[in-house]
Length: 376
Ligand code: AMP
Image (cartoon, rainbow, N blue to C red; front, side):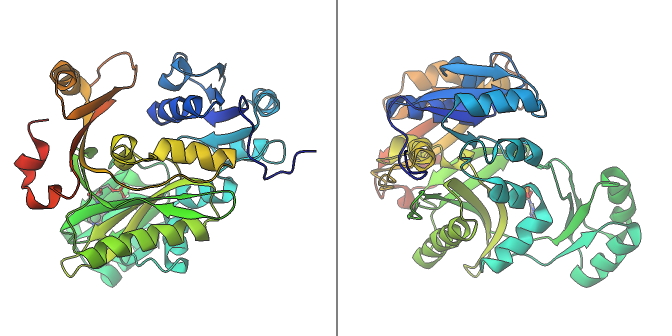
């Protein structure tokens, strides 16, 4: 019998829960390593299904379909963290799930995430749980204003949150976001938003990528500058933090940690994503082994690859009609690798693709934003 931690043999099938661009790029990396992918998602013709050998079109709570899926694949991973925990629970025990239920559950709940970060020795902004308007008032007294009120679950790209600047903002924000469980966080006067990515193999080995600086537009990631133009101690700290998160979560796969950089160089943890991350797309073209290949290697039980950065990079997300309009000109450039996800309509706010502008290694830190972007 094959030992449970033996690498998946060539030709084995990796099941992916979710059919978006992260599943698509994971499936493309898996194909390069000789694996097939089977996408399980409720949407037909999803970006992941277009490039995979097999697909199951079913709801995440369809237990019979999940059991058939488990029987058809050799390992399971997921490409977004809002897969219901019950879905993974229906698969665990039937097929190796990498990452498993624990990593998923911690990252689905902002309160569990904050407690976990503190245990992993990653500092976070002061916070309080809020389940009533009275608790919100007590939390404001304890934390002060400004502060950010967030739903504890299913928030992404700035959805499900409100900034409270004055006492009179509390009532309307609570009315809008309740009755969902909430958390109040101190507003962090950050000088930059940083993220770092780690991969952890089945053997417990951890590899990290250079930390990057992220800029958002309309609450959606717009740009990642790789590497982040940070003091070297902060850059090393960012990698240490995410490496500890990967090990403490006992994760197999990729994990991203979003952080706030404070004026004194300290970093506060904000969010964890236990999957390949948009702020890691630059690694596809600027590192020897990018995040998607690394994720597949971990899930398949292969050794991790080198995270060495051979170029500097600026990643731009191609979003909505504006992203569609930029696509042809990006294709004609000699310094850009462009990726398109095969989505249908170019709705406003929809991530359609991304462009990685590559620059010679160690040149980004001497450029201002315009020089770094070079018109992409
Ligand atoms: P999140 O959904 O937690 O990633 O938050 C979305 C964005 O809101 C972040 O990328 C920050 O720009 C901003 N934000 C979130 N939490 C805070 C905070 N505690 N202080 C300041 N800005 C925040």
